[in-house]
Amino acid sequence: DAGITQSPRHKVTETGTPVTLRCHQTENHRYMYWYRQDPGHGLRLIHYSYGVKDTDKGEVSDGYSVSRSKTEDFLLTLESATSSQTSVYFCAISEWAEGTDTQYFGPGTRLTVL
Amino acid sequence: AQKVTQAQTEISVVEKEDVTLDCVYETRDTTYYLFWYKQPPSGELVFLIRRNSFDEQNEISGRYSWNFQKSTSSFNFTITASQVVDSAVYFCALSGGFNNNDMRFGAGTRLTVKP
Image (tube, rainbow over all chains, first blue to last red):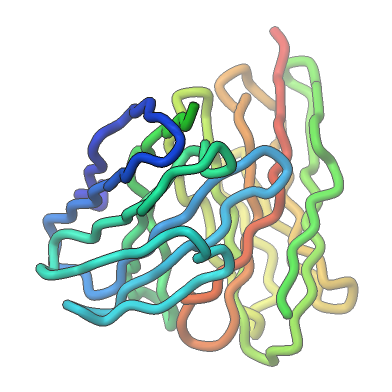
């Protein structure tokens, strides 16, 4: 158990509304990640953070922003949700072991944009 | 660019059969890491194994085994004597270098084990 929680776990929203998803970790990990999971695509990286206020884009960052004001919290914001952002969103942390980082995932948030 | 291909979208077997999940990867990095994750019907992602590019030894953990072959860029996963509880989606993933800030996942293989 990597001590990761995500909130909310489920959300239904309407097109054009802002949405913020929260990832919370309790073990002081430096690196945190947001992915989305879609059928036929596996998981794709949206954004990641390598420290407080330090973030960078991933493979599918358009339409998303992130913030990290505290080590334990990494927020993902959809400024104006679209139906194409209907997905399952996973947060992950990274732990160093045996020469590399291994990512461990939170329970996921299912987001539906109507 | 890095890429992972899991050509088997869905596999169905009967309990106690052996099953192999294929994973083929592409990378230009000389140092890279390969991973397998399991996603059971409950939806969480469970880490199974990590392998670095310098270690081609096969790994066995109970009924699970992994065959890493650099010559064919493959990292296949075999479940021996499958059980219903093995039913899940399995993802292969690749990261390059010494950090995995650009980890790429395959599309996943859905394994169904029937009693």
